[in-house]
Image (cartoon, rainbow, N blue to C red):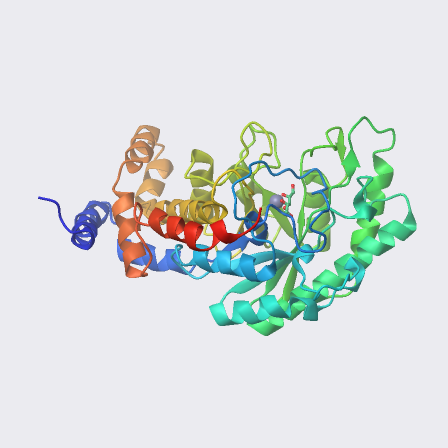
Length: 425
Ligand code: RNT
Ligand code: ZN
């Protein structure tokens, strides 16, 4: 006998609930906590980080997207439709993360240092309708004034000034998002600046970057509207030998200037654990932004999956009680599979990892550790892995009117043939 889908999910949940209850875990409470966590979806997964400024310009800043799956979004309406489709398959209420290069300028060329909140009215109206928060990023790449690999740390004061003005414009746009949507916008600064080969002067560019950032941040903005974040990295394509905005640079800068630090999971040496950094940096910083990503051998920005690394991050967020201090954003771009599905896979994996963490019997476990019973601790951690997490997940999807696992690929296929297949490459 095969149970109807809903009955199967419902009954599995009732049993799973008992498994967790035996450990002292309230599954309904975990679901409620999970549904209060917003994930910021990166708009750039939908169009291979192209943006709408110049459809023929090459992607810069050492960013690389591979794959040729048909159906990428070519304009803002298409990108919003794709995001709507993705969000329809993700339980919870979320946010969308835009880049300045996604401005809608009505066919006019608008210099990046001249961008205004009005150039994002289409996005603001849509976000309001869909009840989404918006986050933002200045775009310091894919631009003639970034072509030599330097922006805010450039030797030329005129080039630096242009990018400072871009940053200033973007902070105002972020504040406008925050005001319009009643939810503070995180404006995240990532710059590609660095050298492919061994530099002689490592100090100069870093001093110039600090001065440019200070100029960009001179005007205080109400954190209820907009919060500044800074994202470093270890290396990039074309900046293998030296990155001006390294992790150390931004950690010190963020602490001394009271800014938010952004940690991208692909921006460290592969044997370093981002999860381990959270409790270390949150001693000295109030808030963090995460770019949840998946590097395979390098900072490859693969679609996020339910990996050990992702689970470790979620565990730290929950065990450390950091959910109020950490904003969670996704950062990957893959053009080798259906782009809408990529968002859904990454967001669902991230939520699932958070759910798993919310289902841990922490008080019990704290006991083992306090008692020095590391045998019990290891057994507990090991056996937690095979508890019926999937039953809880599928049930909450159903409760939220979202498809359970195994039930959403058909929606993607339908969207693929109805919408994506009609688009030019
Ligand atoms: C690049 C950074 C940055 C970008 C986006 C598009 O290495 O991770 O966050 O991915 O701004
Ligand atoms: Zn990133």
